[in-house]
Length: 270
Image (cartoon, rainbow, N blue to C red; front, side):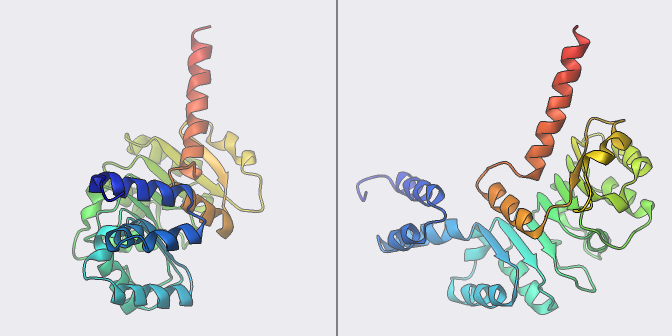
């Protein structure tokens, strides 16, 4: 491998890791090949980081201390912060991961996390924290880059005007997920009218209900898909799927909408 161009060497390492992402031995063995390969392996492994409990928090803070300054700013593209409740720790992690494109933030805190400098394209966060972030003193740079927003986790009900104001500030939003309690059919119709770029609107129902029972109420717009609220395990699987470029709940909703449009087009030509 030393005789190959560096770009090709890295590509080979990346393919080996992605094809064996559950095999720890492959990752460990590749780290032993050469210092640069060790660095490449770490870059790939840290593309997606999930901090979902106290031990994860300790481990990741130790990793931040052990790596060169700036490593995580370029390495981490997907970050899931679950139940991290200390503002200083949240701020430290977000400051270290300044290049994050996909963020899931389900930590209950009293104020908005410092997201304003993150170049986000996908955001999963409770509705009230999204509202706080958008109305913070410093306007977030991701207002102009965000395409996917998931605020589907049941959270305190905000006035419809608050949701409308959030969506008005996201001109490139194409995918939106909401909890059923935050998007009755009247609200959903307003969203579909006010968001011309919107391609997918997912409405999450209770885990204990059949989502199909609600679909008729939203049948006025083919972009709306009702989906049962995923479990924590399903969320974890979707997170991993998105990292690997495999189908997640967004792509499954896209398939539903594309199928509707294809059937409608076929019927119109008959």
